[in-house]
Amino acid sequence: MSAKSFTEANFKSEVLDSDLLVVVDFWAEWCGPCKMIAPVIEELAGEYAGKVKIGKVDVDSNSSIASKYGVRLCLRYPGCRIKPH
Image (cartoon, rainbow, N blue to C red):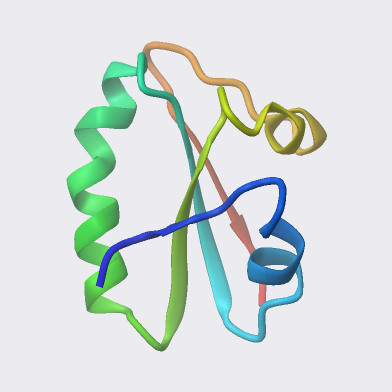
């Protein structure tokens, strides 16, 4: 199973209203560290399928989510936030 894609259209239902623990990876196509961690996110999504919901938010396409939660990407530290269950 691959990581889910969280967007402005589904963020509330998939993340905020989820009954499962949710891990959200905020990423951008131009972000080198984001590309480096992507295989790990995909592996975790498969390993924890049904136990933890793991997904990604493309900050370029969904900037309002990133802005609302104060996520900023830089070349050294990709944004990753965890929503407690």
